[in-house]
Length: 74
Length: 392
Image (cartoon, rainbow over all chains, first blue to last red; front, side, top):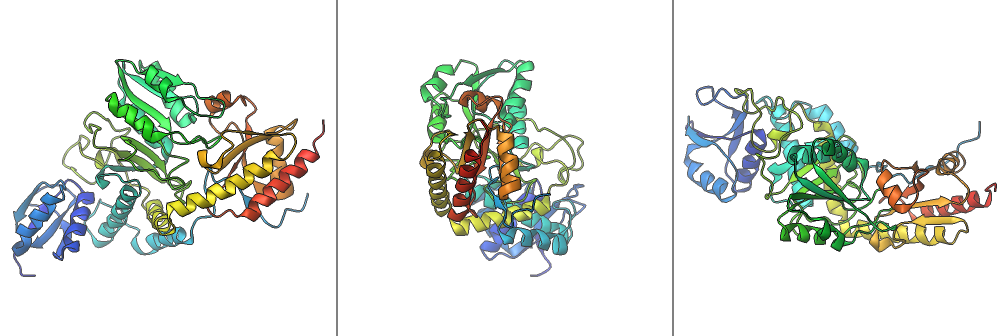
């Protein structure tokens, strides 16, 4: 992974793990991290991915109809 | 003090299954020793691992009942809590609900409470064997009916009800179907989509072979989450900037730290069930139940209640011995034969009224996957001895 990341914000940890399992199943590296303070004051986690894979990740998540609250580059 | 029998025969699986597959305790020990943290609350690795275990169980439950969305598997303590959530959360004053006369108090008591708050309740009478006439269900539907709430199998006689056909009636009349799967989940195939179930209440500690304190409500896609209010409000680890409850499942209904160690055990037990295969488990229990029914029915003075056909019931058999109270039978089975069962009303007074066994109740043998034909032989022999010793 290079240093350019994107994060996927989700309603709760349960959704973060659902997305983690989906992405890992398709060979997309990801890591669950606390939501960066500049994006939300929520105490939950989000899914961090390599920016280069964000397009593929988005397609997978939308195809699986998993609720998420947006993707942000960090 | 009489010497205790060397071997215990556990026939109280309809209350709580025991023993459990060894994988259950192993998963719970592993959780406590290696994970242990609060799921979904903190962002550190142990918290995330804990949340992962919880989610895996959520997904296993969804797969097991063929539920479309694992996020709509709401965990709770047991069927009682799940039914309370569904009934109190969904029903509004002026609405009408239909249930059966074979229900457990986990259904009846919330309904009687709701009745005091302006919900109309119709209890459709079942036959003395516990069967429900579907024409009676259809005849009970009113313009303000919103929900059919039925147990899949009686906890007293094991009588199986045709949930799929009831589900079709619900769809035709644009009603929702709530099922109490306390006695069936893990013992009999349940398919949320094929059976047209909209709200499925399950518990982990019976035929799913998980620990006590696990269970939940699966909410189908026809149920409007915004309409169904939670039983409690509180911290969820999500939307923490707000002082109001989240609107999405499962968080809307899961406030407070969950029984994660129990749910780790439930995940292990469902994996174990999947490996063993529900059809194989059902075949084993049908064979045991038929054996028990045959043996008991040959004993003079024994009256068996329910369908008397293992194919039409779960492996639960209720009976009485002439001139002996169920409580006396239960005590003597425990003391003299090491045979553990449940006697009395089984928290189901309506069912016992239907069977004609109120208020004394019955003796109930609840067979499980770990019971053997030798256990059943011993149980039949014990009843034969007791009935022979009766004092008239």
